[in-house]
Image (cartoon, rainbow, N blue to C red; front, side, top):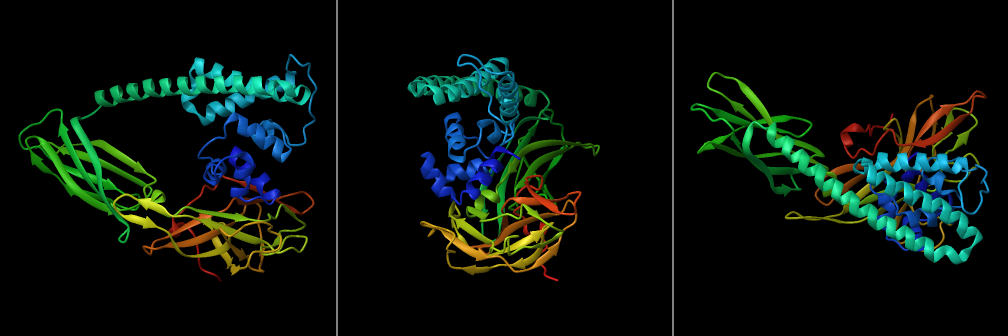
Length: 420
């Protein structure tokens, strides 16, 4: 599991909404959402706060220590061998999450920060008076961390630009997103490219790949510079290229620009959660609407609006929530009032009682709760909660473990919405 998965799991076990957890930690609900979706990592002090709130080691949140692992008692001024191993593993995890941090100086800063956390937590439990000094040191290391990361990122970007220029077929090129039509779900680009070596009779075409199709657009030549405008489907993966064609028919292709996440960034913010998971059941047959102890299982959905520059405000028009196995619909849930299990203010959430339906799972099947969303432009997309994979045990029972090897997929065409 990722850090985000572990935070989401513990939050749900304590029946906390993202907003409620954010209030306890002094951060916004959007911050919690970014942590749980692995779009951002919590600051070190927030990891410590999460550890105390959930009653788990920091190492467990970072995926390097078992939740029930016994706590060693080192001397106040040193770490045990187990903690040193944990430090090394934590550093490796942070380096994997932040590739720019692989420079030696940055590695030392991350290592120092992790050691500060482990030693600081141990001393905090023994000498509460050292708390302020620990946080001051941690903030100093964090600031150095940020500065070095920015410097390395700047150097890396410059090197990439130099290499890109050396290998380019074009002396000058570029692309610009001109406008977005949400009603038609299209986007329009302008493109230009000047070849390094221009010969009489040379022509060019532009290629626009939206994932589902590739369009070839004829280019207009003006003083050796080729240009064109093109409209294509608004998707999460769009690439623009130019093809220079010499008089003898030879074609050479140059990538101009890639755009990722344009569709996802144009849809309303939606978060789908469930109040209970099917952790373990005695056989391969699961009732997707009821827990093994007989309790009803509910899904709850939070939604917000998105502002798309030049296009307007996008919001949820309607939604359906159902249970899916291997992205095939098992049944739709029914919207209901706030269940009594949910205490406090849930006015921002919509609740759905999951269908009372049984499904037989095979080893490796993935089950999840997902919502079919229609926005105010008539576009549809999917948003799912954590996926759970069925793992058969020797006694014939199955364990459903939450995993992320099936990433969030908003494309409706990748889901089977038919009910047999």
